[in-house]
Length: 492
Image 1: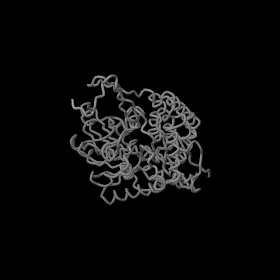
Image 2 (image 1 turned 135 degrees about the vertical axis):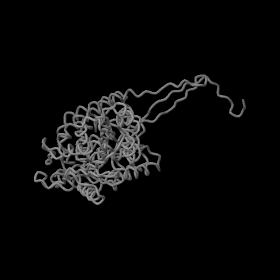
Image 3 (image 1 turned 180 degrees about the vertical axis):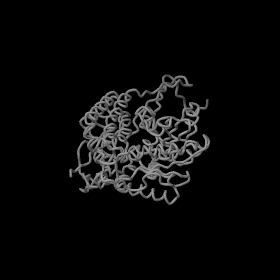
Image 4 (image 1 turned 180 degrees about the horizontal axis):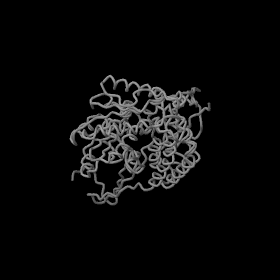
């Protein structure tokens, strides 16, 4: 197995401890790479390198246009190596090569978009109520940022954070998931090739408990951008708040996918199946709660089950595979545990309901596509994020009840609405408490459109114009152009 060191201050470095840990291929269940096991000393070194790059050297001397050109060059290099990076991600997280190749072909757009945006962040001249003063605003980088990414889409989630941070002029320490670090370590080689100065982008690998507290609490860190579970996000937010650090948190979801009886049913069936079984359900916006209007419940469910049964499982490197393995062994066991909980709660298994034992699944961590009917929204299977190929089907009578069920959850990341009534489309989009609402489609994202959650699904927004503002702070500048400065001790 190849060793993969960290990347700090423009150099590949081993962990200060000299330790390594294995990364496992989810399809084979076997280790395939060794990752540097970082600790507090490594995290500290990375943050200090990022701070040096922020305050001295070529990075702070660059114009915004020059930063944008570097970002554009980085996008070109990702496009050049998209296939290779996709194959690395498949080995690391078990997602389908078709999905990951498409995703890596799209990732360069983040760097093109924010590269173009870098020199278009403008301050303003304030029309004052006071004579003899000139007042204007400028937007400056917030400082050293820590980007902590999840294991389901490492390089896409890195782009969500890194592209706007660099466009804003910040420097960054990336902490990838301990389960999927290899693609980020391969990607950072392209950062160097693109010409970014040493220390502008650093990658620290290891386990959250070993490096996380140092990264989050370090006095030189100004902001944390995190994608992951709500529980971990809450801990990060609490730690950061003690030091008044900014946070962008993209956390869990339990998204409702709502189908009305006037919907185009074939489209809605396709959307419901792809909404939960794409990426093996390992996505924060998975449509894991399927709300069906009572009048079409049975017929729709029959169509959905018929389509879901045709899914091909197996080697994620095969272009014919449609559902791959669960990325990590702990997550595999968690998904199976939730399936058992659903059975105990009285939900009815209509499809799947256990580990996949098909020969084409080999020794990997596969779970059969699973559909439960007879689910009440109060059940744990409907309230808690499973993060796997498990669908809960919930009936509703009318629009009012659909809204009530959709919002009766602590999450608010995504939601889908399927209807031919344009008025209903607008009404539902307004009433559902969710950061994104898709109408007659599902799971569409763009580098141009803000993404984030309500309630326990997080803080702040990624993508679009909103994202770069998360990495900037506003300064107000006052210039006296002729106003007299009087004696402060003389009353007027």
